[in-house]
Image (tube, rainbow, N blue to C red; front, side, top):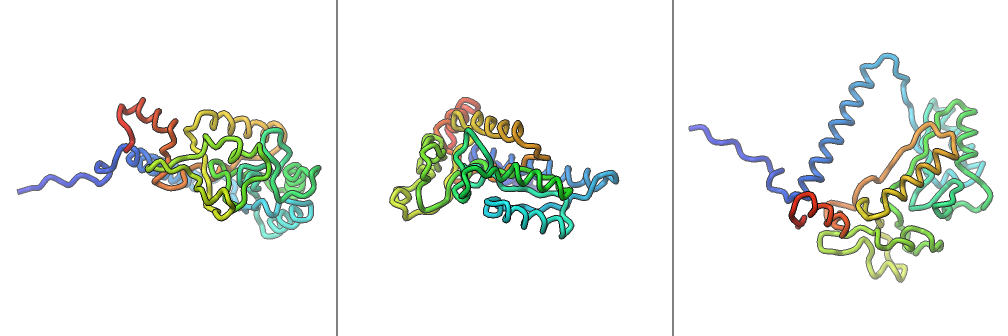
Length: 236
């Protein structure tokens, strides 16, 4: 006698985790398809990329070393980290200046774009998005998102905010994320990206940390209200 196949474990998950898992597989499929299409396109230029972290974006000397090394090793694209923890390694009227930049007048991205293009490199701006802080010390600039918008910090399933009491006295250091669903977050990031694209001749934008802290997060009040509105139940 034939037995009915067992249902996938996917259906045993709560709707919130179903959504996260489904999103992952859709993204995986799209990425895989993109790789296949690119591989079958004979006219495509081979992309050889190097990621340059913000510690190498703090002076003309450090940028020269990174980009000249990339060029000498045969790379043709560089991804420059211009946003690490809710900060700016470029001249911004919106985002606080990166704390590793010591010269207040130095525009690291402008310098890097000019230098990179002179070396024949395509230069992309690399931004960490929802990850906004990870130091055991609080930001010194009061306009930093961590201080200016604590209401944007994501929350876990047990309503634990993505910040702990011991962080305030400097003993913490856990990465802190803001919620993509919090009101105002999307508009903020659109403004940030427009500022970069308006000011700099970059060849592309690379978005990193477009995710939650882990599977237990994503329970910000704005996220929950949108979930209830769409599905008619709470994501518990």
